[in-house]
Length: 344
Image (cartoon, rainbow, N blue to C red):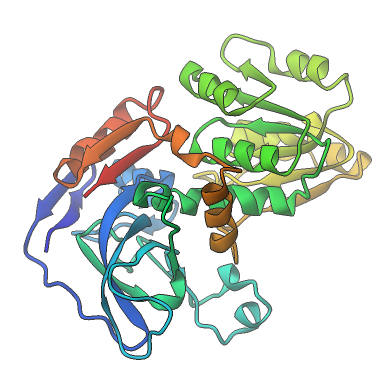
């Protein structure tokens, strides 16, 4: 089978030198049909690392994937050959205190696609635990199935933020995760959703997806505009999805007294300064997001029912043989790429 190997920074090579895996007990073999290009994958491709984690030689990227079951391992009863599935990329131990309490995203022994040394799923076939493969309804494509992974992040973020009917929301960052957070907040009934970003294409997409207002951080005074839009009080919930130190540091200034901050984006470096005095005098709640949990069925149902139209965020599509071009485009044309998907 073909596999896309990252040979070094800014270079992926597709080779057909790998054996198709055999599904073990409790696993299914999936022929991958779509793989989204995630920010963490891009960091590995561009920098050869994410934070302190280095990419090994011949590393395989990709964790936002969906495809078709082609073989079923022993003991699998809920899936059959021909089923189209979205793959939740992490599978936990199932035994620790976090797994037993339902917070399996915090499992210290979780195995996650494209988290070194574990290979990613940018390959023609993947053997994966059946319990982490979720059947797609007939009215959903496998491209939409691949987008369930980032959507689950947005749903988890808005769930932790307790977004409800009538809430006023501010989202700092209009990339893929910012936009799925927007979609999730809208689905939960937020009455006002303001998105801040530097790139016009992202802001235009945010308006298309239902943002009530957008702020161009490069040309507008962000603080003044937020003051105007939220009547000088600040937002009920502020989501930081850019993973940038300056926007993380802005969050306590933009949230309402008694409001909530949800930190979704992860900065590449440690943050030296955060105004906790500003946070404390407002008596705000600060929450952090690490992936998601127990949300694939909810996300699939939301897309299938039409409550959330996630496919709108895809701006660029590539073939599997164009994997290097796909990642290079995302890096070099960041202002125009919102979501890239590799189709097999």
